[in-house]
Length: 555
Image 1: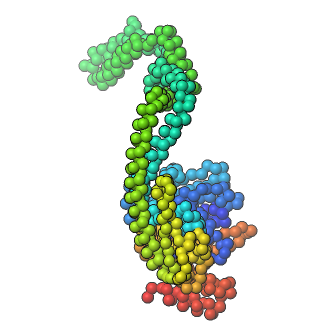
Image 2 (image 1 turned 90 degrees about the horizontal axis):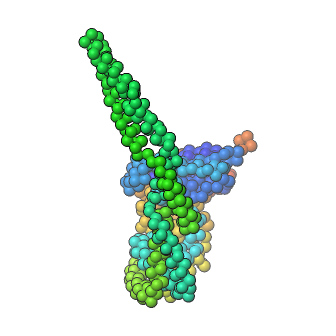
């Protein structure tokens, strides 16, 4: 659940901090006050594209923050933990939009990416607005909506795997047919590449090892002087450091019976002597391993030059060249025996198509059952939205051949009035009907129960009267057990709110500011009266507002 939203320097918003509650939260205000700007800011937290023109005039960056309560979202807390992010009972998301283009995302204080942000917030909230209604006006999205609402996702995933496998085999056969026309030229070219890569005897990580060896060879003389000379200075030469320390330690040890205070000094000196002797021996061993072979240095330089030439020609890394050689050899094998290869691919394609057909039929059956259930649920929901006599259908039409989303296409049909044949939704539904159908779809969708926060941006546009009251009741019902945030112009909808906010736009010192104020008591009544009667609030509109609130308030 969203508990706090903080917006800074976003469009006409200077600074706004609002705390939302569970249940039905309503945002109202005059046109142009900035209601939709708040939704746009919230959209950034869901991964919407950040644009510099969203930044308030005169500022270098805009910030949007949201705090979510995760106390009941164990799965999401686990995702945060697996991503190495703080996984407590709260999720703090912050996006910074900069004019310089250096936008940033933070999740629980840690720098993150949009790819990390989107799946996290997608499981917490969804925004329904005019873009959702536009989705209903696109028949190509109807099947996608049906699958999402009828839990056909696993079957669709299985079908897509089979579809992709069949398509890959078809493409391989097509490439084989095309390659046959230039078979010999291709064989010669691939054979040359394979031989050149094979003769290079590439080894993974070889270039890094050679670079390290070259560095040692280039500095071999200095290394030998430092290690060999160090051994002599410490141990090997007459009068070496260790020899002098041995004499000094022995001298001190012989005097400890005279002056016991010398004992710890002698002991420390003796320990240092042993440590230096160990260093001296290691330096000697290292000096013996240092190579002065000029021939080896030439070999290393030539090998590195050969590898650099191959990288320019084939791929930037040895690993990629090894992969390339594997693909070349596979294609050579296929081209060397086209008939056997084609026969094997044809058999594999036949089996893949059989699996695709079985998966498609299972998906189609799930869709038919889901479509019937969805139709029943949507019509039931429409009854509560003043469209009780409307008929809603999901029509599934078989395709001539299997497509990427199944064996059929799907489209929503509607008959708004009795006696009329259902027609495509995109052709006959009005704006108000689309709003109510969208709300009915979301109310009927099984997956809606898993999203704790639903945001509706003027979903009631284009309706009024009895239908507006029905929409308010439906939104109130959707808010049971979850959080709903709704922007509305309709008092019939706002009257059902558990918490009512007014978006206010003010002008101070020549600048425009937007604020969000929670309304209680008489303030809420006056806002409702304004929505009922316009800017001129009268005793009659106030009484009407009290009546609306009284009728819809609990108790």
